[in-house]
Image (cartoon, rainbow, N blue to C red; front, side):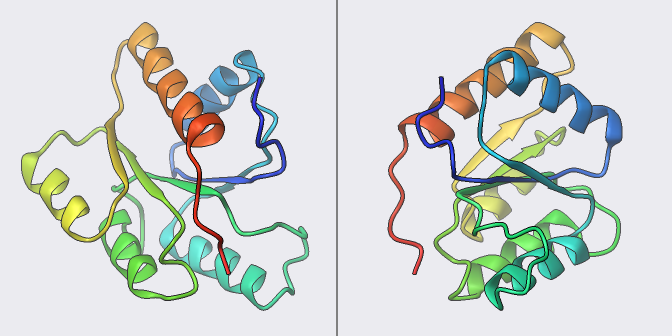
Length: 149
């Protein structure tokens, strides 16, 4: 199903339950992209800077998109978004917020800080599937990214 099979997806999600549900949905949609997971902002920075210095033991390439939860332990998603969009090495990586917060202040803040999308996690399983399907179709299949040099 997915055309850009080699492009990794980085999911930043501290909830094991939410991450497992996301994985199951993507498996059902035949997503072939490698999926990496970090559970907090510090892990993301470690992951990305290790990759940047090409010492990443996983041999991962730069993610084609980051799916970012806002409410994380340590460096939260808001701070992480701001840091990544200010760093020339990571500025071009699309960051899609995937959170339970529908607070207009969070939405406004994220777009002001450079978020490329904002998805509210629905509580209903069918709505969650539709949201994940739309994310996969757009960000992993249809969207064309600039060169990540």
